[in-house]
Length: 245
Image (cartoon, rainbow, N blue to C red; front, top):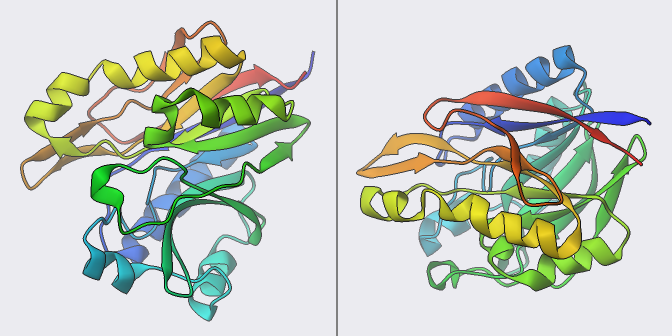
């Protein structure tokens, strides 16, 4: 049976520093290429930072048809794996918490976060469920809080996909981080059991301004079991072989 090597990056939490984020992304891409990975996932809001302050988010947001975003794509034109990356997207006056799908420097499509936290009221919710294929492996995307609800994963499963890619950012005050430390994989496991999907997640790690993130960056099987996971407190690349059939 054919397998496809997939990967997820666990990265520092970059904020309003696109150049630093791209430098990190290119290093992770080189590692993924060297491992033979065909799909590489980055965290929620990775490119500009997970920004929920309206002024900062609007300042950092990019229109996906703009020269600024075209310049980002050109930097990724030599990337071997297909890339899923969190960005803050602008479309007219509207902002979206988006994951873009990029192949060889070409924007394939995007997924916009459907379920928004109270602190994300500056964004508009997404309504579409696109799916994508790499080497015969069909996948869809959820972004962080989406996986707390059955419907987004169910919509992905109904397309015939076998993998759910989850871009996440769980940088939060330490008390909350402690409280939710084991909740993220538990909720994602529920989605896997409900749908029969595999899941790979990508999250940030480290500490900032009294906040901490422990990920997790992990792979869960359709039974909801964690079959691979990075250590919680260090950047790294998770690589996993899954069946494309």
